[in-house]
Image (cartoon, rainbow, N blue to C red; front, side):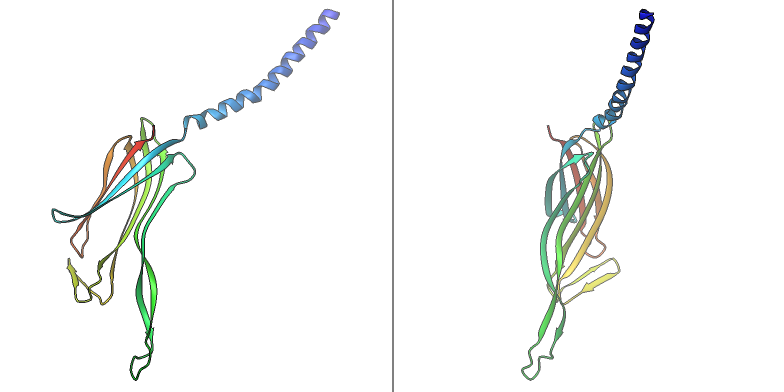
Length: 198
């Protein structure tokens, strides 16, 4: 009788132990996909090159870091604010004062980037590039291009914007954009390089 009671208690103890360990094993299984998507730091280099025919006008490199499979992205903001006249008050005759009203326009480059691991040492870059720049501050100069003529007494502000989903290997350089401005005829090229930080 005592032996049967000990067996029942032993069996009940094993069942209780199994019930306690089952949730712990389930937690281990749930945490393994998170371990597979480990955060990898990447060094990203973007080069914006402007060409007039075969002549290189400018080459602007931007280097920053982004972590793959992280909840945040990297942002780069560089440039200046240009005053643009938007109106005036007063007529300027008989000694009246003319007050010119200005609005400030952001000129420069904005870059946003997020990275995701894609297996086989590849990464998907969700990248956006915006660039605005002054074409001419000379009121006597007109920009003429493909059926378009632009002439202004103030600064002429041109704008470029593009978004990408690039699959890129560690150490690879991709020419993401090569586009021709329809007004100036200049070519804008954007290349992207990704390197895993070791």
